[in-house]
Amino acid sequence: MMLEIKPRGFTKDGAIKAFMREPPFSGRRPVFVGDDLTDQDAFKGVEDLGGMSIAVGDRVRAQYRVENPAAVRAWLQGIAALHDSHRA
Image (cartoon, rainbow, N blue to C red; front, side, top):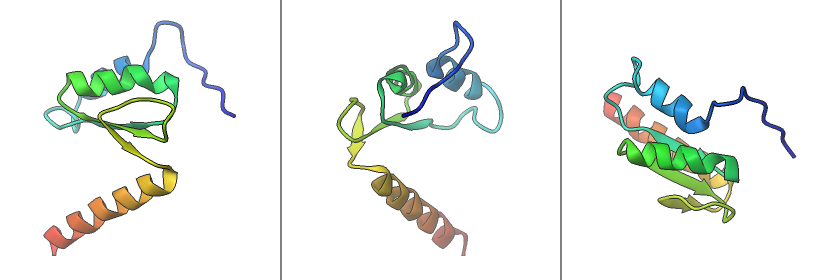
């Protein structure tokens, strides 16, 4: 179980939009991975910005879905390997 504490009036969507106005994030495509109801507004936020939303498990809905945290790690490792191969 986890408890999230945040100031009233702040959302993950608002945080993403604030990040996306600042370097090095501005002009890039946001990606958000989440697994619970508090992530729904973040999914909508990245989608509104032309980004990609990824749900982990089946508790929430997003553009894409992976089964579990291990699948997220494997996906990120694949991206890192692709990036490394282009740098060589």
